[in-house]
Amino acid sequence: MEQLLLVTLVTGFTGGCLLWLLSRVVRKYCIIDAFWGPGFAVLAGVAAFRVNQHMLTPAEQLLLLATCIWALRLGVYLAIRILRDPHEDRRYAAMAEKYGPSFRWTSLGIVFLLQALIMWFVALPVTIGCSGIFADGAKSWLLPGGLLWATGLFFETVGDWQLARFRSRPDSSGKVLDTGLWRLTRHPNYFGDFCVWWGLWMLSQAAGAPLWTIISPAAMAFFLLRVSGVTLLEKDIAERRPEYVDYIRRTNAFFPGRPR
Image: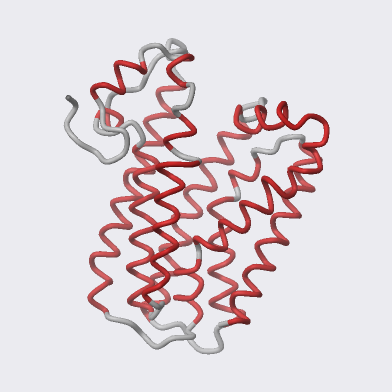
């Protein structure tokens, strides 16, 4: 277990340092967002093929495959969005303005290495489940885990597609997307991410990961709801989009439901 935790942590920090160097070349801190998903696939692959010394069981194969599918979809989507936008993401632009010229150096710790650490922590069910350290768990977790993961992937994929299509319209500036999945929840992509990680945790239980790894999807849910997800995104959005105030009144913030 100690070797697994150390190897995956070093892998994450190494990736964070390389991405920081790349950000200095392209002059965009937001490139780390495009590597958020693929980073989990890398950690899962390292756990499965470097730490694991035996053939992957069917449950481990399913866990690794589900992680990679989610990671590839998210990584490609965010990479395309970042490449198409010549501007820095407003979150990182605000941080750069706050910290001043020193941010080009301090961003290594407060952005890239911090996200690498969070990634390593959130990925614990996946890395431990793929490592083969523990014997197979209860196969009863496979069906609910797979269904929840598929539900999350659907909400993420369709929600991102609907948002991209909405933003491509010339008359969408300053307006609010309130159709499709966005009619049921103000953040279908975040809800989808929530479902994906609880689904992956369930799949990890079938692969033999210990029960205490539940702290990882719980932490991810906390980040999505209270830190870097809903709370951060809606902090000043009503000032930029006045229609959003009414959208908040009639639409659930996170979990899907009928509009009020």
